[in-house]
Image 1 (tube, rainbow, N blue to C red):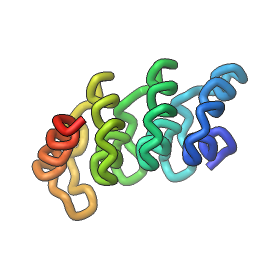
Image 2: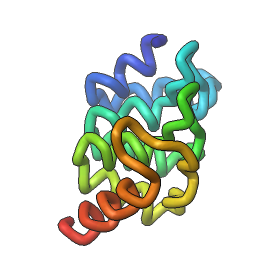
Image 3: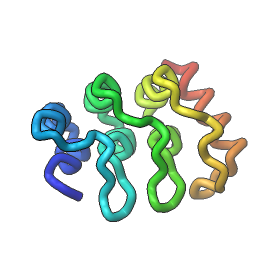
Length: 118
């Protein structure tokens, strides 16, 4: 994880402009396949997610295990992040694998419940 991804992980909104202003891609991927968006979604940092989405980040990039930011946000119970991702075109059908202990159908139900709860 590089410094800018560490900012996303910690919830620092300063990481995204720093990445963009230095010409780096907001879609850069760590050695384990985590993007800035995946990192922020995992931790539930909705403000960072919004900033990244505003800068045109890709919403459906899978990590090395096939998980997308939407998958991890739903699994971790981050309803506001789920809503933001769906409103920016994240695909509910992007996961074609079992995510942790959830099947794709179960994950879709979790996403829908989180979306409706916000």
